[in-house]
Amino acid sequence: MKVRRIDHIVLTVADLEKSMRFYHEVFDMPVLKEQNGDDLITLRCGHQLIRLQKAERPTDLKAAKPTIGSADLCIVAGDNLDDIIHHLNSYYIEIIAGPIEKHGAEGQMTSLYVHDPDNNLIEIAVYKNK
Image (cartoon, rainbow, N blue to C red):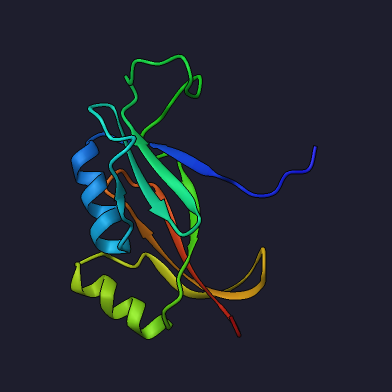
C-alpha cells in the first residue's frame, strides 16, 4: 500500500455549533455544505478536512469509544507568529504553551498550543523558510 496523506480527521465534540464557530472563526476554516447535517459538520483545513461529530452520532462507522476532548493535532499556519498571537488574543484564546521550537514532518517549526472548546489540544505550527 502506498499511503499518500491523511484525507480527514473526525473530532468528537459536545456542541457541534460551538465547535464549528470556533474552527470557522478562529482558524478561518470554510464550512462545507455538502456533508452538513444534524450529526456531522465538515470543515476544510488546507487540503484536508476536519469533521465534527457528537459521541452519540447514529452510525457504526466511528471509533469504538469516541471521546470528547481526546484529540491532539497540529495545524500548519501560513502567517507569521506575531500575527497569529495577535489573532488568537483578539478572540480571547488562551495560548497554553509556546512559542516552542519543534521538528515536524517538513522540518524545523515553531509552535503555539491552544485548547478548542472541548479541550482538544491544538498545536499551531509555522515552518521555518516555508
